[in-house]
Image (cartoon, rainbow, N blue to C red; front, side, top):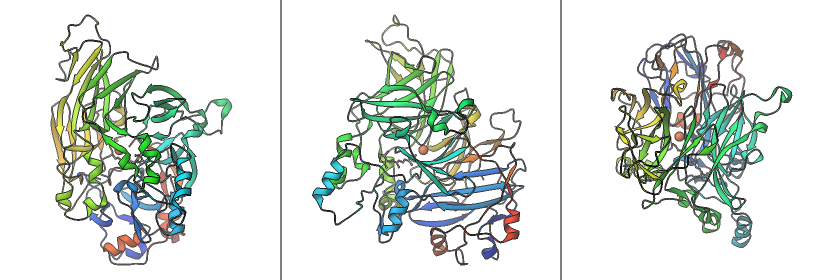
Amino acid sequence: MTAEGMSGSYKSCWDRDLNSFPWPRLIAFWLRCENWKPLFLLTGRIPTWLQGTLLRNGPGMHTVGETRYNHWFDGLALLHSFTIKDGEVYYRSKYLRSDTYKANIEANRIVVSEFGTMAYPDPCKNIFSKAFSYLSHTIPDFTDNCLINIMKCGEDFYATTETNYIRKINPQTLETLEKVDYRNYVAVNLATAHPHYDAAGNVLNMGTAIMDKGKTRYVVFRIPAAVPEDKKGTNPLKHTEVFCSITSRSLLSPSYYHSFGVTENHIVFLEQPFKLDILKMSTAYIRGVNWASCLAFHKEDKTYIHVVDQRTRKPLPTKFYTDPMVVFHHVNAYEEDGCLLFDVITYEDSSLYELFYLANLNQDFEENCRPTSIPTLRRFAVPLSVDKNAEVGSNLIKLTSTTAKALKEKDDQVYCQPELLYEGLELPRINYARNGKRYRYVFAAEVQWSPIPTKILKYDVLTKSSLKWGEEHCWPAEPLFVPTPGAQDEDDGKTPGRGAHLPQSACDHSSNRDIVWEQCDPPSPAPVSQSWWKQALKPRSVGVQSSEFKESLKAPSLLTPTVS
Ligand SMILES: CC1=C(/C=C/C(C)=C/C=C/C(C)=C/C=O)C(C)(C)CCC1
Ligand SMILES: [Fe+2]
């Protein structure tokens, strides 16, 4: 939690073994390189209305046997939950038992490729059979190490990454359930880990269909929260539908993207010049290179802004574009006086992903980890209807609320120039009730010339002012805004700080179903030191907690993920 902090005692499954240790009120975890370092957060007060369970996901294990991953985004997914009840927080964690996890642990080495690490299942297989088996299909079978986020579909929760696989999990026990292949429901080879939700909880996500029926497309698909009455009990995924699709400008080098924007009537998709090279991907195995090497930033290209009308499900006809840039996180988007405004965190190149190679994060960190461009919050404005007779060179944006421009060009093109709002923030969150609507506050991690956040930030788009919280030895990261029940003001709520880039389920104050927790076996008691944290990371079987502790863990389950 952040500035308001939290009070109450921090209980964990290791409580009985380590209660002699002067536990801080709350411990925030931060994985820096491979060493977990406990960070003691503050004392303070958790508002009594803040009840619920925060689910989070992230890379948790970067070495298997003698082998180690190359990149931060490769680590085996470690699920965490924080149950907040009456001023106390109960923590648990569990590795996602993906097929990748099981194959690696069984082989006691990395045998499945990830973003930054190419691996081979069977080293003694000769190069020809390997080549043949991998060349047999253009798009290889990707990993199900779903380490990025948590998605809620109806009453189900899934760990997600950016491949076609998601893994269903039990939100109470963090156990891994079914492996789901999006391709069984919608033709996509990749999909973002940043879906949007409407007020009814229906999921809207995007993925890329590579060379599907001779075309490569960006596909927006919708997963209903509830199944039709006559289909009660079926899996909502079975009712997934293609909402709309945008044809990629290139068959074999579609854009890489990490998120997208929505407004009440439109969808915003940036076809950015940070591209996947499909031919390189289909030969990556036999060339022995990782997937990351199949991504490239083309600074001579443009960034195309696609706007799809949700009512017609068709892209607007005008060709909007802006300068080459790389965006991972959309913040929000909304419509005002016939214009669509969208706010994104922009980079001038794709160097951020380079920074997160563990070799860069390990030694002389300050030197290696200087991004060549700082994440910058920029606001774009796009006219939703373009006057054909508008003078070439004229600015089509007449709003007083922004200095963003949309310059009319010949042959129906419009060149968009953004307004710079704030330099040095990432992992943006908003009060999600304002998603797609006019809004005022961005909650984010302040990131200066290093990928390691140092402060939590609340930025006011209206006044261009910001509030910050930071403290020595604290590395807060992605905040999650939880509105106060019955709040009127957009920023009336709490923003608990969170470990790097992670998923969350906020709290809803309504349900109070009790859950009884089986607890993981605590690691052997040890002073809190690096070894203890390393040990804590070892996969643990689920054991049964001592009765009194279990009793105290009867927490209301309030699992309502917002978005991540
Ligand atoms: C495995 C794999 C991929 C993994 C991408 C990942 C894991 C990206 C993580 C991004 C994050 C965490 C961004 C944070 O803001 C790609 C590139 C889709 C290509 C297909 C194979
Ligand atoms: Fe993200």
